[in-house]
Length: 320
Length: 153
Image (cartoon, rainbow over all chains, first blue to last red; front, side, top):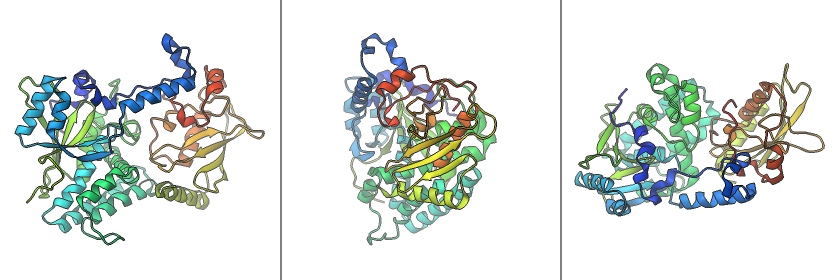
C-alpha cells in the first residue's frame, strides 16, 4: 500500500485556518444536546428548541445550497476566493493552472464529496471514451465481479441491489438508450448527479464497495485503520461501520486506496494545502496500473474537501 | 414518496414475511411506507425480563440513505424502557440513528441493535437530562442533535 509523504489527515484541520470563511463548508457547528449546553453562559437561557433553531441557522449559513455537483468553472473563480486570504493557496492555484488544470467542478461540502466527485468523473470518462462500448462493458463487468465481494463482506443483496442498479443503469445508458430513447449526455449526467436520489445512491454504492474491499482484505488494510480523531487502531469492521459506510463521513487515504482497487481505476489527487513555499502541488497517485485508455481522473483536495480538477474552463468537452 | 424508499421497504417487508423476524421482534403494523411499528422483547436474563416494548419507525423519501426516525412508543399499552440512553418520551440517544447511520442497517437491523442495547444494560435509569429534554423535545427525534453518551451502542 502506498503511503504518500503528504498525508491528507495531517492537512485536515491544521491548515484550515487559511481558508476563506465561505470555504469552511465541512466545519459545521454541532449542537451537543440539551443536557450539555449550559456550560456556555450566553446560551444557558435558551430552550432546547431555541438552541436547535439557532444551530440550524448556523448550519444553513455554513452550508449554502451549492448543487450536489456543479458545472465547471474557471480556476480564476477559486483563485478569487483566496486572493484576500492566503497567498500560499493562490500560489498553488497558479501552479495548477500552469499545469493546464484551468477548471474545477465543485461539489457540495457534505462529507460525500470525495465519492461524488470520483463517481461523476468515473462515468464522465466513459462518455468521453474513444471506444465507449468497450469501456462500458469493462466497467460493468468489473462492478458485477464485485457483487460477490459485497456478499462476502456481509452485505445482503437487499442492502446493495438498488444502489448497484442505479449506478449500473447510468453506465449502461452511455451506450444504450433508456426508456425515453435517449443515451446519456454530459448535461443529463450532471442532472442525474444533481438529483439527490440518484447521486446519493451512487455515493452509497461506492461506500459499500470501499467497505467491502477493506473488510475482505484485512491483511492489506488493517495496519492502516486508525480513528481519524483519536488515532487509536480500529478493526476493519469498526472502521468501516463508522467511517466508510456511514453517510457523510469523509474519505481518507485508506478509503481512496480501497476504492481504486475495487473499481480497478487509476486516479490522482492534487493536494492544495497552502503549505508549499514555492507553490508546488503534490499529486498523490492511487495507481492500480490500469491501462484503460480513458482520460485521467484527477481530484482536487483542499483541507476537508474534494472537487474535480479539469483541464477545461467550461462544460465543452475536450476534443480527442 | 420517491421510489428509493418504497423499493427498499418493499424488499425489507417481503423478507420479514418470508423469513420471519429474529426472536423477540415482531411486526405490529406495516401498512404503508411511511410508518411501521414493531414490538421488541429482550430474551433471556436481563433487566427487562417480561417487558414488551414497541418501536415506531418513520421513513423519509430518502430512506435508507437517510436514517429512519425511531422511537419507543409510549401510550396506554406500551412504555419507554428505563435505560440510560432512552428518554421517558421514547426518544433514543443512539449514534446509529444519527451520525453513524448507514444504509447497511435495516429496520430489523435497528431492532436487533436496540435489543442488544437493552440486553447489555446493567442498571435501569433514565438519562441524567431526561426531564429537561422531555419538556422541550421535538415530536420527531431526528430533529434533536444528540450528544451521544458513549459509543457502546
